Length: 256
Ligand code: MLT
Image (cartoon, rainbow, N blue to C red; front, side):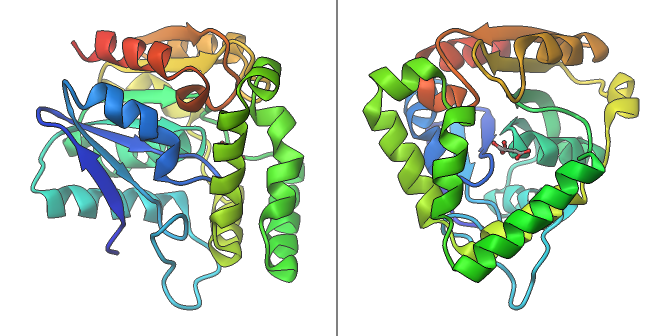
């Protein structure tokens, strides 16, 4: 799979993986801020942004998304990287760790978790996939999710972030969003494997993230052999868009 990606900077490779239903643009500020020190690569996962689905594919698993990224690293001629995934990007991160740990120097998990969906959560994903396909539009997701994904302060004080958020969601292809939603419903539970994650791992989340609350993310960091935790102020679930400078600072500190 030839993934679309953007890159900037020189140095050790930092792979920034977006969440659902977004694309590489959620990392635009971080790519600028961190490219002074690192080679920053921001792909679009299969089915999202400018990376197409394979023909007639209606489910994309987290494992397939992880394999696509290993293939991208080979294409770039890179043997080692730091993998940073936000939310669904984190689900892909656990699979990447399991399937391709030889590439990993360090791991960063933003606003995510290590669990599988509950049966109710999975049923909701399948319903979402069906609705996106029948409406041939992702617009209802943008409206329904804004209040959960963005901090109240972002919604009232940063209209440009809300606008970028909406554009990214709405520009995604309904087929891609549906396939990836089904893939998330089928994802594995990694909680029993956390003690095996040997590489240094940073866990960060927004102080106002209601989907990945700070207490849960702290517990995740504490379950890892070499985990550390940073809480990002004035941010909900989309930390790199809501408070890019604080996220860049946390990553820079961790990497050095
Ligand atoms: C994301 O931001 O990637 C989503 O919140 C992930 C999810 O729906 O579980």
